[in-house]
Image 1 (cartoon, one colour):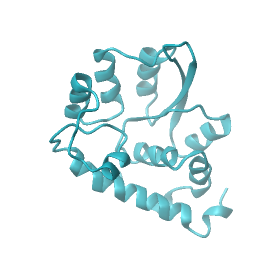
Image 2 (spheres, helix red, strand yellow):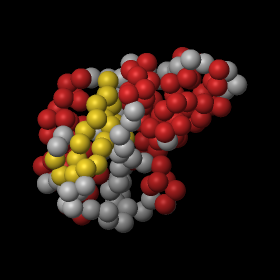
Image 3 (cartoon, one colour):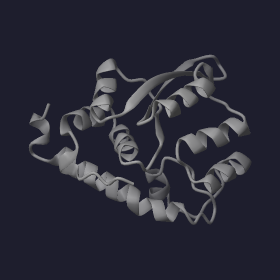
Length: 177
């Protein structure tokens, strides 16, 4: 992983992304640093936010999905690599949100989730996993019971989130382009 010091992060784009939701800015930094090959924000974004993602060195794309009732749902996917975006779009653009196990495995892999957690989710859904609610809420995936990977990821995720908060709270951040 490439740990980027907060001083090197452009605070203007990060603040604008965080205004959409802190998790969006966090997902962007996780991808920038290589903790995730691809991230999915479960909302559409205006063109200006796609520009902010580009300012961080990310590529982004809007994906159209649909509910079982036919309602269109927009997602935004972001990655450093266009091939990863292309593959996600090829498999998931213009498709239902409900996916089959093979698609779920691919999606989990593209999103960088621990493989054990992906398999457990595919087979058992939201099974009890022993994590406290606060820890589970910090994650972008559902941890599997007895996971040995997720407890190692949590401190890294917390570190990135803390560095992002420090960047967003820096006095000069509000005045940056």
